[in-house]
Image (cartoon, rainbow, N blue to C red; front, top):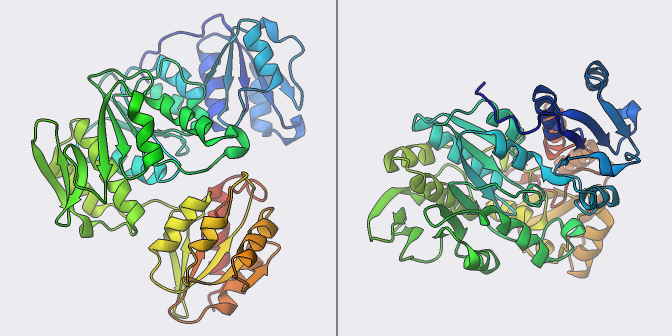
Length: 458
């Protein structure tokens, strides 16, 4: 563990939300000698007993299913990503002089290494993981952290001056950054998501654009040229903008020419990374992810030969178009990370077989019209579960798709899909929704799907 910047000593700090990032912030604040309190929307009986013991042993005041009575006493609130910044007790604390930040910003302030920041609606985990593998193969001290599931603080407390923090960043995390300034940032795409929180696409895009807000002219921002909404965000970017495109030949940036992934600098220098058909991860969206990862890595100074080597060998990430099994000639694919309609569309388009599609889950105020339009003869049956099941069914029936079954849980979905499938079909879990109505996370949902599939074996 490296020496930390002691920015919390003797400060009155309220940690809001006790998930992974909140607990990491708690440990840091206690270590640095802050006067710490915690708040969580869950009642005390739903908090992990070991965490409660830690709080008691450290004499940390906990506010569970309630908020502190006097918000004017705090110097700082550290919000978990799931906590909206406009909650009344948060705005009261800000009005009383408290600084409102998130775990990412706190980690940045204590860390010594350099950052890569990757955001976008879809593809963040795949791109972040691929960049992490490239950096590791290049022999760099690398920490793959953030929305990918590892608290940024965990890496920040270990990272040396020479280390790199390869960070997946959500729009929620970006709402609470201030000083955060990555060496290379990336915005992969921008499609409707989390509108139940951001309300409008303009607000959502503005949150994403905060990733480059503190960058300088000697740093880089990698942006999707093929996505007009996304590329327009870079109009005000202070860093050097590096576009990537799978459709167009570019004067500068990462693109595909004659079947090869090419990177071209402003001065005209070019390097060939690898063949587009050499990628092991399927789908046009993964070609975009590879282009972005290659551009991020190249402009962070990694040898192009190393980038190409890792791009050729990289097999993808768990829960994103993940092969699970082939049973009686039917393939089963786990795309639980398809938590919005656009992500699910990309998974559907990546399949070559007829699809029995399992979808549905928590409602993020998404519109499912384009999702249903993407069926386009590919999807032969739709199996639905969760809070959004009825909403998706109505959208599908309005579009003329009627081969639909409603199920109570994942086990029923998998059994129903297996009954419908014939050899040569694929059963695809790609929910187009978050998991929070039935599961703690998309990972838990994906693991349950895989368990249900294995139960089909004779």
